[in-house]
Length: 380
Image (cartoon, rainbow, N blue to C red; front, side):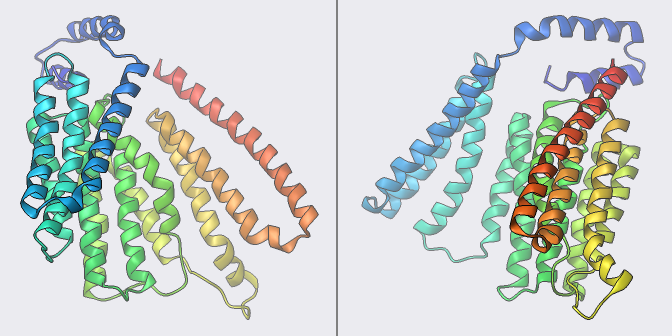
Protein backbone atom coordinates (compact mmCIF):
# COMPACT_ATOMS: atom_id res chain seq x y z
CA UNK A 1 0.00 0.00 0.00
CA UNK A 2 1.38 3.47 -0.80
CA UNK A 3 2.32 6.05 1.81
CA UNK A 4 -1.13 7.65 1.59
CA UNK A 5 -2.86 4.66 3.23
CA UNK A 6 -4.57 7.02 5.67
CA UNK A 7 -6.57 8.64 2.88
CA UNK A 8 -7.60 5.23 1.52
CA UNK A 9 -8.63 4.07 5.00
CA UNK A 10 -10.74 7.20 5.42
CA UNK A 11 -12.39 6.64 2.05
CA UNK A 12 -13.18 3.02 2.92
CA UNK A 13 -14.59 4.09 6.28
CA UNK A 14 -16.77 6.77 4.70
CA UNK A 15 -18.06 4.23 2.17
CA UNK A 16 -18.97 1.78 4.95
CA UNK A 17 -16.52 -0.89 3.80
CA UNK A 18 -14.61 -0.72 7.09
CA UNK A 19 -16.29 -0.05 10.44
CA UNK A 20 -14.90 2.46 12.91
CA UNK A 21 -13.49 -0.16 15.29
CA UNK A 22 -11.61 -1.94 12.52
CA UNK A 23 -10.26 1.33 11.17
CA UNK A 24 -8.97 2.27 14.61
CA UNK A 25 -7.27 -1.12 15.03
CA UNK A 26 -5.60 -0.65 11.63
CA UNK A 27 -4.30 2.77 12.68
CA UNK A 28 -2.95 1.37 15.96
CA UNK A 29 -1.27 -1.51 14.15
CA UNK A 30 0.38 0.78 11.60
CA UNK A 31 1.48 3.19 14.33
CA UNK A 32 3.11 0.37 16.30
CA UNK A 33 5.04 -0.83 13.23
CA UNK A 34 5.78 2.58 11.81
CA UNK A 35 9.05 3.17 13.65
CA UNK A 36 10.55 -0.16 12.59
CA UNK A 37 9.71 0.27 8.93
CA UNK A 38 10.74 3.87 8.59
CA UNK A 39 14.28 4.86 7.71
CA UNK A 40 16.21 6.99 10.17
CA UNK A 41 17.08 10.58 9.39
CA UNK A 42 20.82 9.92 8.82
CA UNK A 43 19.98 7.37 6.10
CA UNK A 44 17.50 9.71 4.42
CA UNK A 45 20.00 12.57 4.53
CA UNK A 46 22.71 10.31 3.12
CA UNK A 47 20.46 9.19 0.26
CA UNK A 48 19.41 12.74 -0.59
CA UNK A 49 22.96 14.08 -0.36
CA UNK A 50 24.32 11.19 -2.41
CA UNK A 51 21.71 11.71 -5.15
CA UNK A 52 22.50 15.42 -5.37
CA UNK A 53 26.25 14.83 -5.42
CA UNK A 54 25.87 12.11 -8.06
CA UNK A 55 23.89 14.43 -10.32
CA UNK A 56 26.35 17.27 -9.78
CA UNK A 57 29.34 15.03 -10.49
CA UNK A 58 27.84 13.68 -13.70
CA UNK A 59 26.98 17.16 -14.91
CA UNK A 60 30.47 18.40 -14.05
CA UNK A 61 32.09 15.49 -15.90
CA UNK A 62 29.96 16.07 -18.99
CA UNK A 63 30.57 19.83 -18.99
CA UNK A 64 34.34 19.30 -18.66
CA UNK A 65 34.44 17.14 -21.81
CA UNK A 66 31.58 18.77 -23.66
CA UNK A 67 33.71 20.70 -26.15
CA UNK A 68 35.65 17.57 -27.11
CA UNK A 69 32.56 15.63 -28.15
CA UNK A 70 30.86 15.61 -31.53
CA UNK A 71 27.16 16.56 -31.74
CA UNK A 72 26.19 12.90 -32.09
CA UNK A 73 28.31 11.91 -29.08
CA UNK A 74 26.87 14.75 -27.04
CA UNK A 75 23.32 13.67 -27.75
CA UNK A 76 24.19 10.03 -26.98
CA UNK A 77 25.74 10.98 -23.62
CA UNK A 78 22.68 13.03 -22.67
CA UNK A 79 20.28 10.20 -23.49
CA UNK A 80 22.50 7.60 -21.80
CA UNK A 81 22.70 9.53 -18.55
CA UNK A 82 18.96 10.18 -18.58
CA UNK A 83 18.21 6.49 -19.02
CA UNK A 84 20.87 5.43 -16.50
CA UNK A 85 19.18 7.10 -13.54
CA UNK A 86 15.73 5.70 -14.27
CA UNK A 87 17.02 2.19 -15.04
CA UNK A 88 19.04 2.20 -11.82
CA UNK A 89 15.96 3.32 -9.90
CA UNK A 90 13.90 0.50 -11.41
CA UNK A 91 16.56 -2.10 -10.51
CA UNK A 92 16.66 -1.13 -6.80
CA UNK A 93 12.95 -0.37 -6.41
CA UNK A 94 12.16 -3.67 -4.64
CA UNK A 95 15.13 -3.75 -2.24
CA UNK A 96 15.58 -0.05 -1.50
CA UNK A 97 12.48 2.00 -2.41
CA UNK A 98 13.84 5.24 -0.97
CA UNK A 99 16.97 5.04 -3.12
CA UNK A 100 14.78 4.24 -6.14
CA UNK A 101 12.69 7.34 -5.46
CA UNK A 102 15.84 9.46 -5.24
CA UNK A 103 17.28 8.04 -8.48
CA UNK A 104 14.03 8.55 -10.37
CA UNK A 105 13.95 12.11 -9.03
CA UNK A 106 17.47 12.75 -10.28
CA UNK A 107 16.44 11.27 -13.62
CA UNK A 108 13.53 13.69 -13.92
CA UNK A 109 15.83 16.59 -13.03
CA UNK A 110 18.28 15.33 -15.66
CA UNK A 111 15.44 15.39 -18.17
CA UNK A 112 15.48 19.18 -18.04
CA UNK A 113 19.20 19.24 -18.73
CA UNK A 114 18.69 16.75 -21.56
CA UNK A 115 16.00 18.89 -23.19
CA UNK A 116 18.00 22.10 -23.18
CA UNK A 117 21.32 20.43 -24.02
CA UNK A 118 19.67 18.68 -26.97
CA UNK A 119 18.41 22.04 -28.18
CA UNK A 120 21.95 23.37 -27.88
CA UNK A 121 23.43 20.39 -29.73
CA UNK A 122 21.14 20.81 -32.72
CA UNK A 123 21.08 24.63 -32.55
CA UNK A 124 17.33 24.79 -32.06
CA UNK A 125 16.02 28.33 -31.58
CA UNK A 126 12.42 27.63 -30.79
CA UNK A 127 10.03 29.04 -28.21
CA UNK A 128 12.14 28.48 -25.07
CA UNK A 129 9.22 28.03 -22.61
CA UNK A 130 8.33 24.93 -24.64
CA UNK A 131 11.43 23.31 -23.15
CA UNK A 132 10.04 23.92 -19.65
CA UNK A 133 6.70 22.53 -20.83
CA UNK A 134 8.37 19.33 -22.07
CA UNK A 135 10.18 19.05 -18.74
CA UNK A 136 6.89 19.44 -16.86
CA UNK A 137 5.23 16.85 -19.10
CA UNK A 138 8.08 14.46 -18.28
CA UNK A 139 7.50 15.05 -14.57
CA UNK A 140 3.78 14.35 -14.96
CA UNK A 141 4.59 11.14 -16.82
CA UNK A 142 6.75 10.23 -13.83
CA UNK A 143 3.78 10.94 -11.57
CA UNK A 144 1.57 8.64 -13.63
CA UNK A 145 4.11 5.80 -13.72
CA UNK A 146 5.83 6.03 -10.34
CA UNK A 147 3.24 7.72 -8.12
CA UNK A 148 5.73 9.02 -5.57
CA UNK A 149 6.00 12.38 -3.86
CA UNK A 150 9.26 13.41 -5.53
CA UNK A 151 7.71 13.31 -8.99
CA UNK A 152 4.66 15.21 -7.75
CA UNK A 153 6.90 17.84 -6.16
CA UNK A 154 8.84 18.30 -9.40
CA UNK A 155 5.61 18.53 -11.40
CA UNK A 156 4.23 21.04 -8.89
CA UNK A 157 7.32 23.22 -9.36
CA UNK A 158 7.70 22.84 -13.12
CA UNK A 159 4.07 23.49 -14.06
CA UNK A 160 3.94 27.02 -12.54
CA UNK A 161 7.48 27.52 -13.87
CA UNK A 162 6.22 26.83 -17.40
CA UNK A 163 3.33 29.27 -16.93
CA UNK A 164 5.77 31.86 -15.59
CA UNK A 165 8.11 31.32 -18.55
CA UNK A 166 5.24 31.76 -20.99
CA UNK A 167 4.21 34.97 -19.23
CA UNK A 168 7.74 36.37 -19.25
CA UNK A 169 8.09 35.55 -22.93
CA UNK A 170 4.69 37.04 -23.71
CA UNK A 171 5.17 40.38 -21.97
CA UNK A 172 8.61 40.81 -23.54
CA UNK A 173 11.74 42.58 -22.46
CA UNK A 174 10.16 45.99 -21.92
CA UNK A 175 7.35 44.93 -19.62
CA UNK A 176 5.98 47.28 -17.02
CA UNK A 177 6.19 46.66 -13.29
CA UNK A 178 2.46 45.97 -13.28
CA UNK A 179 2.83 43.10 -15.74
CA UNK A 180 5.73 41.64 -13.77
CA UNK A 181 3.68 41.91 -10.59
CA UNK A 182 0.93 39.76 -12.11
CA UNK A 183 3.45 36.93 -12.24
CA UNK A 184 4.31 37.39 -8.56
CA UNK A 185 0.62 37.41 -7.61
CA UNK A 186 -0.02 34.15 -9.46
CA UNK A 187 2.96 32.42 -7.87
CA UNK A 188 1.84 33.70 -4.46
CA UNK A 189 -1.57 32.10 -5.05
CA UNK A 190 0.08 28.79 -5.94
CA UNK A 191 2.18 29.01 -2.76
CA UNK A 192 -0.92 29.47 -0.60
CA UNK A 193 -2.65 26.55 -2.30
CA UNK A 194 0.32 24.24 -1.84
CA UNK A 195 0.78 25.23 1.79
CA UNK A 196 -2.84 24.64 2.75
CA UNK A 197 -3.25 21.31 0.97
CA UNK A 198 -2.08 19.55 4.15
CA UNK A 199 -4.88 19.46 6.71
CA UNK A 200 -7.11 17.11 8.68
CA UNK A 201 -6.55 13.46 7.82
CA UNK A 202 -4.94 14.36 4.49
CA UNK A 203 -1.39 13.64 5.63
CA UNK A 204 0.18 11.89 2.63
CA UNK A 205 3.78 12.48 1.61
CA UNK A 206 2.55 14.19 -1.56
CA UNK A 207 0.69 16.81 0.43
CA UNK A 208 3.61 17.22 2.79
CA UNK A 209 5.89 17.91 -0.15
CA UNK A 210 3.44 20.49 -1.51
CA UNK A 211 3.24 22.10 1.94
CA UNK A 212 7.03 22.38 2.07
CA UNK A 213 7.12 23.98 -1.37
CA UNK A 214 4.38 26.43 -0.46
CA UNK A 215 5.92 27.27 2.89
CA UNK A 216 9.34 28.00 1.37
CA UNK A 217 7.89 30.12 -1.43
CA UNK A 218 5.19 31.98 0.53
CA UNK A 219 7.19 34.83 2.06
CA UNK A 220 9.47 35.53 -0.97
CA UNK A 221 6.48 35.72 -3.33
CA UNK A 222 4.58 37.87 -0.85
CA UNK A 223 7.47 40.32 -0.89
CA UNK A 224 7.57 40.21 -4.71
CA UNK A 225 3.82 40.90 -4.89
CA UNK A 226 3.96 43.95 -2.62
CA UNK A 227 2.91 47.32 -4.11
CA UNK A 228 5.66 48.96 -6.15
CA UNK A 229 6.01 52.17 -8.06
CA UNK A 230 3.95 52.24 -11.22
CA UNK A 231 0.35 51.43 -12.03
CA UNK A 232 -1.49 48.17 -12.41
CA UNK A 233 -1.45 46.55 -15.82
CA UNK A 234 -4.68 46.68 -17.81
CA UNK A 235 -5.86 45.24 -21.10
CA UNK A 236 -6.66 41.79 -22.51
CA UNK A 237 -3.23 40.37 -21.72
CA UNK A 238 -3.41 41.52 -18.10
CA UNK A 239 -6.93 40.10 -17.78
CA UNK A 240 -5.66 36.76 -19.04
CA UNK A 241 -2.81 36.88 -16.53
CA UNK A 242 -5.13 37.67 -13.61
CA UNK A 243 -7.56 34.94 -14.67
CA UNK A 244 -4.89 32.26 -14.83
CA UNK A 245 -3.03 33.52 -11.77
CA UNK A 246 -6.12 33.34 -9.57
CA UNK A 247 -8.25 30.74 -11.36
CA UNK A 248 -5.77 27.86 -11.61
CA UNK A 249 -4.65 27.94 -7.94
CA UNK A 250 -8.27 28.15 -6.81
CA UNK A 251 -9.18 25.16 -8.99
CA UNK A 252 -6.29 23.23 -7.47
CA UNK A 253 -7.36 24.31 -3.97
CA UNK A 254 -10.83 22.91 -4.61
CA UNK A 255 -9.30 19.62 -5.79
CA UNK A 256 -7.10 19.39 -2.68
CA UNK A 257 -9.49 20.74 -0.03
CA UNK A 258 -13.01 20.29 -1.36
CA UNK A 259 -15.52 22.44 0.48
CA UNK A 260 -12.78 23.73 2.78
CA UNK A 261 -11.43 25.69 -0.20
CA UNK A 262 -13.65 28.60 0.85
CA UNK A 263 -10.80 29.64 3.14
CA UNK A 264 -8.51 29.76 0.12
CA UNK A 265 -11.09 32.05 -1.50
CA UNK A 266 -10.72 34.37 1.49
CA UNK A 267 -6.94 34.29 1.03
CA UNK A 268 -7.45 35.09 -2.66
CA UNK A 269 -9.54 38.10 -1.63
CA UNK A 270 -6.61 39.27 0.51
CA UNK A 271 -4.33 38.98 -2.53
CA UNK A 272 -6.85 40.94 -4.62
CA UNK A 273 -6.85 43.78 -2.09
CA UNK A 274 -3.04 43.65 -2.03
CA UNK A 275 -3.15 44.20 -5.78
CA UNK A 276 -5.01 47.49 -5.39
CA UNK A 277 -3.03 48.89 -2.47
CA UNK A 278 -1.37 52.22 -3.37
CA UNK A 279 2.32 52.28 -4.15
CA UNK A 280 4.69 55.18 -3.62
CA UNK A 281 3.70 58.57 -2.30
CA UNK A 282 4.13 62.22 -3.02
CA UNK A 283 5.81 64.71 -0.73
CA UNK A 284 2.81 66.99 -1.16
CA UNK A 285 0.46 64.51 0.48
CA UNK A 286 -0.30 64.77 4.15
CA UNK A 287 -2.65 63.46 6.76
CA UNK A 288 -4.69 60.29 6.37
CA UNK A 289 -3.87 59.69 2.70
CA UNK A 290 -0.14 59.85 3.32
CA UNK A 291 -0.44 57.56 6.33
CA UNK A 292 -2.53 55.07 4.36
CA UNK A 293 0.00 54.94 1.55
CA UNK A 294 2.86 54.38 3.96
CA UNK A 295 1.22 52.11 6.55
CA UNK A 296 -1.34 50.32 4.38
CA UNK A 297 0.93 47.54 3.06
CA UNK A 298 2.39 46.89 6.52
CA UNK A 299 -1.04 46.70 8.14
CA UNK A 300 -2.31 44.41 5.40
CA UNK A 301 0.68 42.07 5.78
CA UNK A 302 0.21 42.05 9.56
CA UNK A 303 -3.43 41.06 9.06
CA UNK A 304 -2.31 38.26 6.72
CA UNK A 305 0.19 36.96 9.28
CA UNK A 306 -2.45 36.91 12.03
CA UNK A 307 -4.95 35.27 9.68
CA UNK A 308 -2.40 32.57 8.79
CA UNK A 309 -1.88 31.90 12.49
CA UNK A 310 -5.64 31.62 12.98
CA UNK A 311 -5.87 29.31 9.97
CA UNK A 312 -3.20 27.10 11.49
CA UNK A 313 -5.04 26.98 14.83
CA UNK A 314 -8.34 26.10 13.14
CA UNK A 315 -6.85 23.22 11.17
CA UNK A 316 -4.18 22.30 13.78
CA UNK A 317 -1.23 22.95 11.47
CA UNK A 318 1.98 24.00 13.18
CA UNK A 319 3.79 25.08 10.02
CA UNK A 320 1.18 27.77 9.34
CA UNK A 321 1.48 29.10 12.87
CA UNK A 322 5.27 29.22 12.53
CA UNK A 323 5.05 30.97 9.15
CA UNK A 324 2.49 33.43 10.48
CA UNK A 325 4.67 34.32 13.45
CA UNK A 326 7.71 34.66 11.17
CA UNK A 327 5.76 36.84 8.73
CA UNK A 328 4.53 39.10 11.52
CA UNK A 329 8.06 39.56 12.82
CA UNK A 330 9.42 40.31 9.34
CA UNK A 331 6.65 42.89 8.82
CA UNK A 332 7.61 44.73 12.00
CA UNK A 333 11.32 44.66 11.16
CA UNK A 334 10.80 45.89 7.60
CA UNK A 335 8.60 48.71 8.87
CA UNK A 336 11.29 49.72 11.37
CA UNK A 337 14.07 49.72 8.75
CA UNK A 338 11.98 51.53 6.15
CA UNK A 339 10.03 54.09 8.16
CA UNK A 340 11.66 54.53 11.59
CA UNK A 341 15.40 53.90 11.48
CA UNK A 342 16.25 56.65 8.98
CA UNK A 343 14.48 59.23 11.15
CA UNK A 344 16.70 58.59 14.19
CA UNK A 345 20.33 59.18 14.90
CA UNK A 346 22.76 56.33 14.34
CA UNK A 347 23.26 55.46 18.02
CA UNK A 348 19.59 55.72 18.90
CA UNK A 349 18.57 53.62 15.90
CA UNK A 350 21.07 50.88 16.79
CA UNK A 351 19.95 50.77 20.42
CA UNK A 352 16.30 50.67 19.47
CA UNK A 353 16.99 48.01 16.84
CA UNK A 354 18.76 45.80 19.36
CA UNK A 355 15.97 46.26 21.88
CA UNK A 356 13.40 45.56 19.17
CA UNK A 357 15.14 42.32 18.21
CA UNK A 358 15.26 41.12 21.81
CA UNK A 359 11.69 41.99 22.69
CA UNK A 360 10.29 40.79 19.39
CA UNK A 361 12.15 37.48 19.52
CA UNK A 362 11.01 36.84 23.10
CA UNK A 363 7.39 37.77 22.47
CA UNK A 364 7.03 35.91 19.18
CA UNK A 365 8.70 32.74 20.43
CA UNK A 366 6.60 32.72 23.58
CA UNK A 367 3.43 33.21 21.55
CA UNK A 368 4.45 30.58 19.02
CA UNK A 369 5.13 27.97 21.69
CA UNK A 370 1.81 28.68 23.38
CA UNK A 371 -0.12 28.35 20.13
CA UNK A 372 1.70 25.20 19.05
CA UNK A 373 1.16 23.63 22.48
CA UNK A 374 -2.52 24.54 22.22
CA UNK A 375 -3.05 22.75 18.91
CA UNK A 376 -0.99 19.83 20.18
CA UNK A 377 -3.41 19.40 23.04
CA UNK A 378 -6.37 19.78 20.72
CA UNK A 379 -4.99 17.16 18.34
CA UNK A 380 -4.42 14.76 21.21
